[in-house]
Length: 421
Ligand code: HAM
Image 1 (cartoon, rainbow, N blue to C red):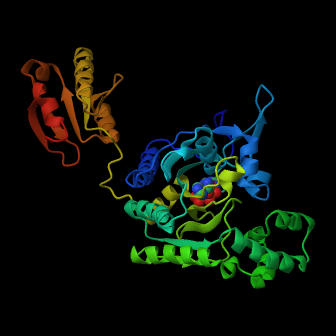
Image 2 (cartoon, rainbow, N blue to C red):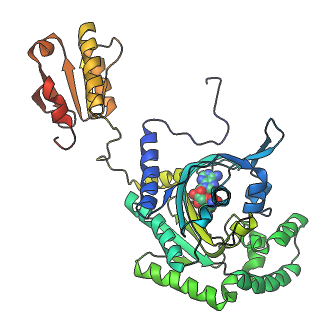
């Protein structure tokens, strides 16, 4: 084993698998872009206070999993564990909430949580997320869920489930909280669990311990306490999903890992992954912006886990062989040192014209160079020796079929330009 290794639990992608990672990420991004969402590129670290206030002290994410450090000026910074709080901070700081609403943004990048690493759970992982901020319309809830669903379908995923529920508005939650706190007060809980439930009693629904699951079986469910407005809004979201033929399951016990949720919340779960099966989730967050010092605007969004979606795609075998894991159109091989100079210049000219190509470097035999051509995944290859240079003609070999065709070197650009080939 070599001496230096990546820190424990980080995900890394290198060729050839990085091609599929990029393909998945781009498909998720495309789904957001065709729905009018625009890029937001944000810092990877923020003031620790942002996540304490935004994500919530009762969550594992804030209480146990943050990568927090002091910078050289003694300020407490934290590597972002999620994207929503940062988006809100930026919207407020730059007064984007004063522009036309809703603000619709997407983001993509690395996120950090000091979790116990296992298959599909990493300490550095990747998300593509969107946020639609400013309006409470249930049509936007539907849009957000549909964007995720469309992305999964266009990747070819089939074995996943959509769980939804509603956490209602402040009034719904307040009346539910009275009964839930009363219910919890009669339970025999350890100190830490009670302390967590005092910050957010809903957390107990998320407890994975068998004994807690058993005692929570009779707990009052928030879905039964929805105000008239919340009920109507949630019904509208369901109607829209049904009309769009997006299957869903109502899961009244679903509690997301972050404290800011209100109203519609949802999770996509892959049926082909093990314990870490959540491939994406999100929901509405009514008080978040005001909590962070902005106007009291509603918002909704999701985070999709690129790492897990790639695992789900692999588990479902969605990548067929027609997906060529190379961007290259042509691979060039020079027979000797003089031809190598010629090929270097030709390669450079082809690239100037936007043609993707590469060449065999190093003093390899023709056989070795042909192997590199195979490995490159390029659509065509060609070999240039003294004869080709003097005649000005080359044999362009289509790698998949093995068929060759004579082409003039001077016509290569025209021949390989995508709209012509
Ligand atoms: P989240 O459910 O914490 O939501 O994360 C979203 C997705 O990120 C998860 O469904 C999962 O696929 C992936 N993920 C989370 N943690 C890990 C990990 N340790 N390793 C690998 N993948 C992971 C959020 O982050 C919210 N900000 C989503 C949101 C946006 N809600 C509203 N707007």
